Amino acid sequence: MIIEDKFVVVFTILSFVIFVSKLYFLTFKKINTALDEKEFKEIVNETKSKLEWKIRSQSKNKVIAESNSSSFFESREIVTIIRKPNYILINSRTTPDNPKIISSYGGNWNNVATFKNEMKKYLKNK
Image (cartoon, rainbow, N blue to C red; front, side, top):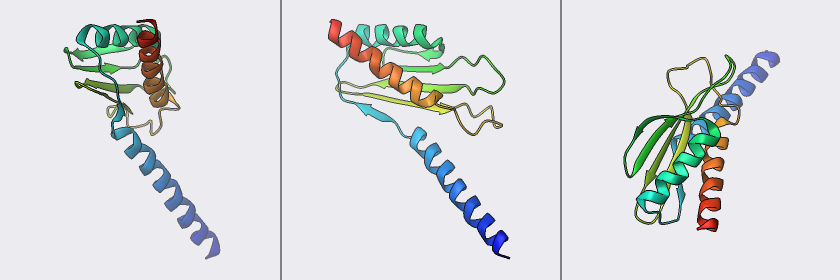
């Protein structure tokens, strides 16, 4: 009986942690900066080159890209970047067409962090 109770507690905690992590990546991160269309495209292209993204769709204010997965155990992520007049919205999430993967193993963090770093480098050298 005690073992079953521990299993229920562990399972509940694990489920909650997975839920919170998934919820975190479904929400957009806001980066307060104003970029024109040219700057936006250049930063996206630098990040794309660095992370080997495949662009699914692109307009002057929005990019949807897919990360490159090189092995069976790695997940692919979908990255959405939206340019607004005074800020950028970005999120990265594990592809929904790969249900066997419940974690990106750091891929989501890497996508967002690399974009932010490329933006900082670009704006610093501007």
